[in-house]
Length: 432
Image (cartoon, rainbow, N blue to C red; front, side, top):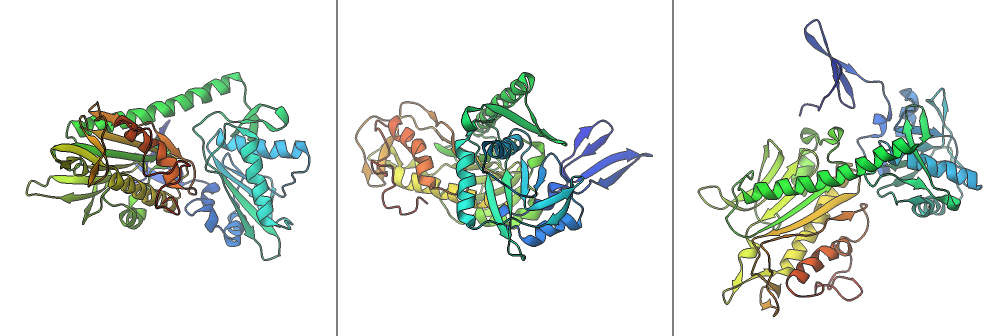
């Protein structure tokens, strides 16, 4: 896949290369090595060798990379300094804090590590401080301690670019905002804050616009393969940074992973192919190549699951939604998608958006044999409120419970009967 370039004066650029015109030709120039040395694998997979490569390659500190020789969190001043570093990354482009690495003139010099008696306690303390002393909470931060051959420990903290902007340090009652540029962190003024608030609102608008556009296209039969003209389940997942032009997925590099983890919502024997939008999973059902389901992976990381089969069921001429199959299918899709995102090193959080189309008059059914008495769904399209998957950990079923509850409420019941009162899913020991 060709890299994505953005215009900048007379040259074009992406995160790795500059493409500039000269004498009627285009020339490709590789950018100076920076934090890209840490990109391409998960933080948890980084080793001492990866950190030594930063020194070998003469990697320089940047807007997205900062080296720290040590991390002391004894005094309030030291704690505020650390929290300000974290906030500054989240309010800017995200990036990496590398602890146990000295620098000279901003260039990685020596990997000396830190003396940490109990690494687990140290990491838990960092995570607790970040959680309790930053507002609003930053999701998706990943801290990875790396044992060194000298017996000491280095650590890499990855802070994702946040979209719940702006974040502030609130330790000891303070309320201070920071961001970053190439020279490091700096406090934000009123103009900067207004810009961040506007950016956050813009991301929310883009998410909902994406959803509405996709629903409109499906209703107009403008789909990558033609769906049966039946009631439909439409389910979207996407990283919050999906609208960042630099966050495109290289399908050529990751095609095997995408194909391995993507499937149809209700299973089956699918076919696969690339298309203009990205990568498609589908299962043609007749000579006209109509299908009851497809899964579309978009280049920006968004995933669209559709199904036009499950909602066609009827018992005694009563159309119904088999909630047991429906909920388990959604849980499985989210679990597989989260694994895919982790393999792509996509930064959480991820947005989950569930919609039902053509469901006016449908009953809620506990399973395929038991339609529940009560009201039928009173509208044709249900667009459930978005929810966030904040990390790669945690129980998917608890996160999705509000989505399922909303569907049950549309059919006259207060919550999904596949959950117990305390929120645990019946028959589940791990939450999918």
